[in-house]
Image 1: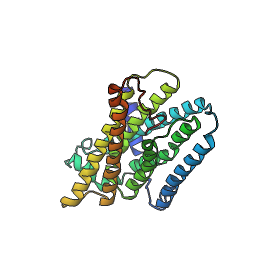
Image 2: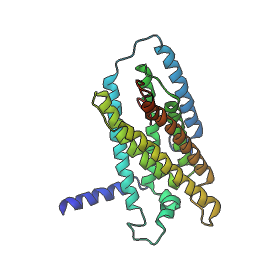
Image 3: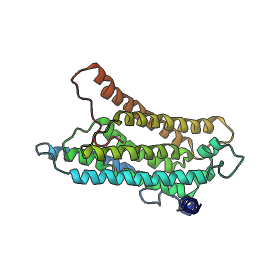
Image 4: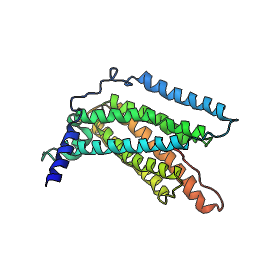
Length: 282
């Protein structure tokens, strides 16, 4: 009983952590559109320059740094995933025995959006996307191929997470929670891979990544439907929903193409090594 009380107290503390914090467009660090766009453009330029520098050089031995980088992202993603999950449970109508429609509340309510803990988690997740740009740097330093999906996903995700905060999307927790969970498994896989440990579930990881985009598109589409066709509109505006649906759907198409080329063609073409999304696709 004592252990349960400690766990309950810890969960309550997490759910209230940052309760007074608010994301203020234009005032919160990195909240300006110009900042996000400059970062993405700078990312593409730096990668091109770095590729030119490395063209006639030998691959750099950065395995220790790579393992530390992936382990850090795995741990931070796990912390944010647990924090977000607890905060959502503690603020759900189900836990509060509320008569509110749970789906509408969790996807559309201004009350959930205005929760300080959730806004702080969303912002931390947004900051993490900048750090994740180092994924590509490690690829280039090791002279590994950088495919379009990898670059596009990293750049577009910064703009997507910026947009969802500035457009006040309540539904943004859906793709964020799923993505954090995927990142825990994905970066754990990269750590094991770097340590030369065989991972039999790599294919399933790509499948789960594809599923997250279906879930994300569904939640954003529901929010957009509510905004257009119901008297009680979703909190936020239609721009956030349109951006969410468009970007997540583009991810779905590109990851499906990658999945087919990696695993579908492998079955048809003997002796062909499947494409790699290393290190890291997401």
